[in-house]
Amino acid sequence: MGRIVAVTGNDAVAEALRQIEPDVCAAYPITPQTDLMQRFANFVSDGKVQTELVLVESEHSAMSACIGASAAGGRVATATCGPGLALMWEMLFVASGLRLPIIMPVVNRALSAPINIHGDHSDAMGARDSGWIQLWSENAQEAYDNTIQAFRIGEHMDVRLPVMICMDGFIISHSIERIEYLEDKEVKDFIGEFKPLNPFLDIEHPKSIGPLILPDLYHEFKRAQHEAMTKVKDVVLTVAEDFEKLSGRRYGLFDPYRLQDAEIAIVILNSAAGTSKDVIDEFRGRGVKAGLLKPRLFRPFPYEEVAQALRHLKAVAVLDRADSFGGYGPLFTEVASSLYPLREKPIMINKIYGLGGRDFMPQHAEVVINELVEITKRGRIETIKEYIGVRE
Amino acid sequence: MKPKGWRELPLGGVILEAGNAVEFKTGGWRAFRPVWNEENCIQCLFCWLYCPDMAVIVNDGKMEGFNYEYCKGCGICALECPGRKGQKAIVMIEEGK
Image (cartoon, rainbow over all chains, first blue to last red; front, side, top):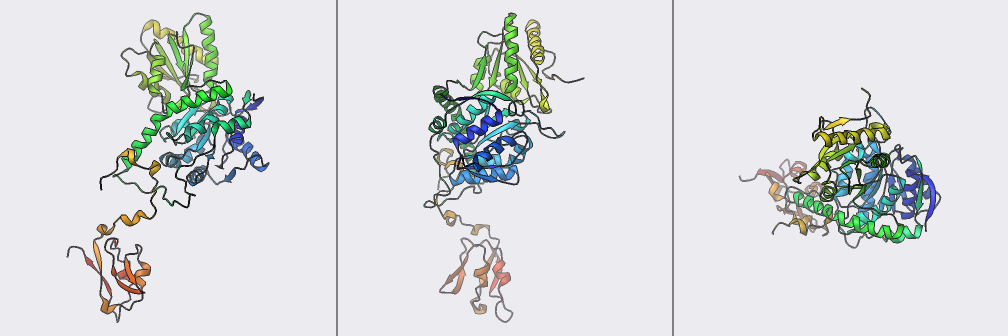
């Protein structure tokens, strides 16, 4: 049995990294990720881990150093958020294209301008197409658990892809919650020994990494990368099954909440899902058949499974904490793509909420559920995409 | 050689065979060809030293000509060649002429 503690999200993920003890960690501080890596740096300084911590001059360099260390044959992790992730952008594609299983907690933060350091999903949504696996976490416990599972997922021989573990800046990273930690040995046994694939430092077998690949082969390499993504769902479920045996905590591709007999539902990521679940309970108490779906695996997106989970509903509201200006929210487009192949599908609306750390309050969820109830009565919608919780 | 399909490629584009750049013949890029005139050659080996592609053939310390399978025709050898009495030992000739 593990320890039960009261810690912040950043503490919890730093603890996971201590227990995992990667070979190399290259990082650059950025709020609200800073104290995650600061706590991990303390573990290094105190001799609690043997990890080689490389303090670089930017996030671009942090990811570059991680790529080098991973290609050399090490187990590698870093962490970032917001504009830091944006600065890594070029190198994110190098990490995934080279098929390096680098693990990176992303403490979701808004992008500039205006400058804002608070919780918002624009950073990770911007990296949606970078070829990284994305696991999203509602609370500190999920961020801790997802970090540990991420190593098994990314390093799986059918996958070999980098993984981002997303959690909300400040709301989770800086709030103290009750967490159950696993024992160090349990974590070490769970993730197992790192198995390098074609490591650079295997000097008996010299090789070149990152060569120029022209139109005669590039298309084939991307096809192979797509194939790896198609293997991820099964690996995520197998790893979750093993993790449940170890921890008693159950994970899937997404978290369905009171969805089975629901008529209307909210689809929402991360911390705001917790708030919404409370509101769902209130409405259920009043006889409104409301449910919720909280995606966990956002890349690859489990289209068929999401469609099966939502197909019986009359109306669905997808809430996005990021906007694609001139488009629908990024989560909305995925859920809409999931449902499109169905002959009978729910009516859908998209709400943009909580940008730049604006609190998502229970009354925001209430407004959305009331609108869904209205929609099911009228059978039509006025506006597909709308900002909520915004001052006129 | 049949081009490889996507299932046959090493993960992440890593090249597992050391030194296989030798199989990549770059001579076809050439628009101008260096031609060696032995009479004007003082065997200074500047051409060998400056050649970016190791396309100057040297045996027992003596320049013996060019390896046209790799020479891209950059012309550095001809530029650097001091020749003898103002006569270049390497001149660039347009391909196809």
